[in-house]
Image 1 (spheres, helix red, strand yellow):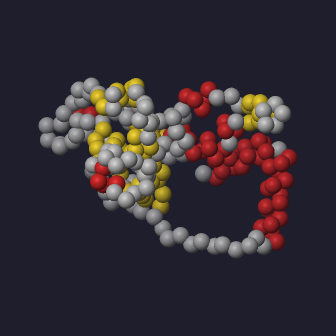
Image 2: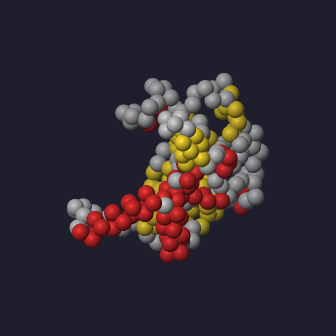
Image 3: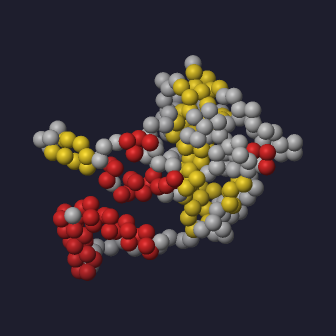
Length: 238
């Protein structure tokens, strides 16, 4: 599947491009140990989430959008120095961050306090998807170290072309002071085909139950080897 991303000509080379998520794994994932001792299990070695394929695949799937410049939070205020080129024709914000007024979240159980603004992480890339393809935008998966949480939304990017999809977010760490560096991931997107779903819910038949028992047996016998073989098969089929 081919997705097109376009920025204003004056911005090309001045802002980070969207990237496949697998090319931008967090440093902490690389740094954490593969196994650790578990006090609850009598110092037995246990595997960390570094060995969990669904979590790793979550990090690696889709597209990451990144903060266009350094943004500093100090004394409750955002600031930045970003002398980006200006288009003589296009009307585009010069700010990497915008705001939604508190009233726009009225009645929504988002964990915000009355009077809290919802920030808007501005995106400077238009997106064009093939016919019938939408994109789900959400917080970068499993990136709980970030002081904000991007809200999720779906956009039909085969129909909404030429404009910019921005990312509303909650600022979740009121004690945070420091600088979010240019290139910090601010949203992760997953393309999917719009089509009607059909749910088939039923008890397992005899063949399905045997498959279940066989899978459980393989997981107990060689969990790491079995998961790797499943991932390799899926990669080949893709």
